[in-house]
Image (cartoon, rainbow, N blue to C red):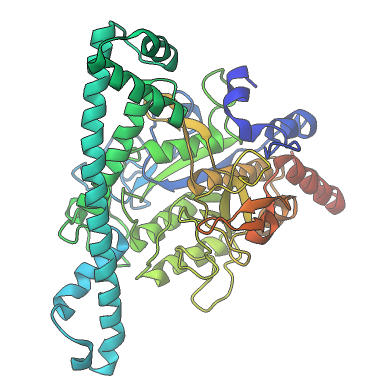
Length: 521
């Protein structure tokens, strides 16, 4: 393992009393070195993957029956030129959806023409439940839009002031970089009052943020600015509609052959990061090491900046299953699911084909035993979906910060935790950066599942789920509960009370193999 990867990818290291790593390198070094893996296909349903990334190019799935760029559906699967996967949020003319509304916004826009200006008392009993939903969604949309507009205006103003100050200081001091060392020296000697104030202010901000230099803060401000703008102008704007780009009938839930072959799309940061965690090339000396060393990554684009549509999620699952995916990573989620039944049909289809679905628990810091979070790990009838693993996010230190402060949790609903804070992985342009979220924890588990399936190919989806859960390292560390910050036992926040561990999972798989009298290749 390259030294740079060892330093930047804490989650691959062995667990210690102080660090909750998942023992990836130890598993390869001690348990798997004399075994030959069988390639495993993992689908990443997400917002897009950079197919040109230096650390992903070699591990991308290539559809063996499709001829690239000939404009024909060579394998007759209904999707033209699907060489690396498919994009369900793109149009046949090559355009792509970038931003999308939240599901609550779509519900509100749908109900508004029917109930705007009406009172509950004037309605028939059969309509009152739907009216209540209208009132609830209206309040939520208007509150969120106002909140994000105010935040966007505030941060935009600060960003402009900060950027101006940084540019002015660089010019005045004749430097290209403003780091803490430079600013500390200047703050002690500068006499110009007009310059001293921004020097002191920027230095204080860098120290508060733990940032290397002023440009790093600029990048974070740009990202926050873009996110807040998207929420204010697109996600919670009932007048915004990007679906015309796709050209389908959004209400026709049986429609499947729409979209295009561009699995990268315009906003591939999230999906590229997720793909790298699972399977970034372990044979080169570049960037990072993915968890799985014998994996092929299929990209299925279905998640825009905003809430994914149930129809697209269902079709993405079906596409992945039909084209051979054995594991599907789903780093997305939302609070409403109006066409939940079509997603469940696709999950049942995946179940019938023995495909494991790994799903992020969500980043609202809430208890999803009681709060809505979709796709749900339970069917509408209340029965548990057996081929779904729901994953919460943990952090590195075995302290009261062991659970990531944003992570959803649930003793009955979240199966296991995995590293999801400060995860270093691939981003577009053959670059790398840290990101945090249960979106990062889910592919850690998908990567572990891929290792198990590749080295022990006889394992079923049920075996994979059971082994991952049974081998999780239990923690009884007192942690700050998300939302309330109450001190609770980490073990109380999921079914297993533990964090996934590849070394222990491989040991369990080996024990099962020995007990059955079979040996993997």
